[in-house]
Image 1 (cartoon, rainbow, N blue to C red):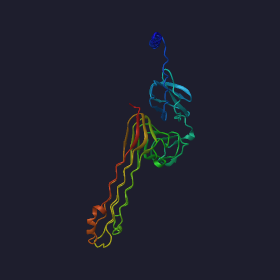
Image 2: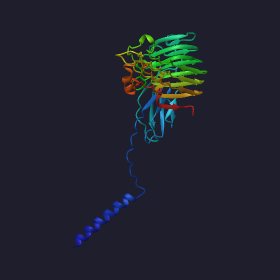
Image 3: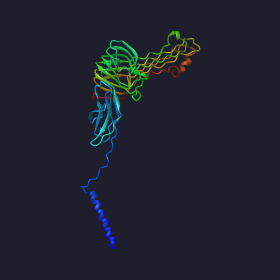
Image 4: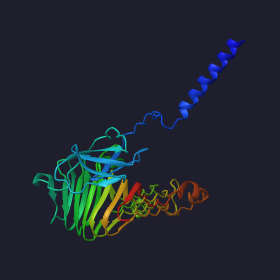
Length: 347
């Protein structure tokens, strides 16, 4: 019995000693392992880069061609003028640790273009050609009819607009405007007030003239108005106002008429008006200029009416089916701009 009592006292003293050890403030207990920082994911629109906040990070290091250029607690940075193509990445950090490198992006130069890289349209009144990736800057300084198709590329395109008055459109091949499919930006450098006004759609053929009488020819649909600017990312720099107006849809044509004693044919059916064009289609619109941007989508065209129902023979039957069979055209829809994301640095 005495041995049991001594053994129990020993266990009690051992437990008490252990408890005091963990409560002793003079004894250091190792900290839990620091949580690893996630690498940032960065995007760029020309020389402007942006990234999402990294949990537990309190600052970010920005590297250009592996050289540290800035440490910031912001989530974006504008690099500025670049005379050579460069690579950029970002590292998140706090007081104790750093993340791995972010994804590495190519930043295209925005100054110091060679003669072969510049297309100067100053003084030209018309230009309707496709632009290859060898061209990195276009200069427009006057009123010009422009049909500018941008072929596939992966480098930015700078378009300098000097009091430009453009009648036409600037668009990518196949009208693609998703940056995930075509990873580049189009930069408008404004100098003065500039205008881009797209063409209206053609009216549908009208068959109400007498030579088409009794031919039962339906009116032709109006054509859609033209879009103005269709690019993966649109950046506006410089100073001035930019006004963009898409084309209106064409009106539908009228159907052929029937004359008094036509015994077989009814009048030609009505037609649809064309849809209005879109002023802007882009994944990202970045505004970094002094001035205002105004854009207007095109109006839809008016529907075409059926031909005159003049026959005393076929006319009564046509009248009964007028709204369901003959007067079936619809007015065109107003165009719709598509801008998935707007970054306004003017605020």
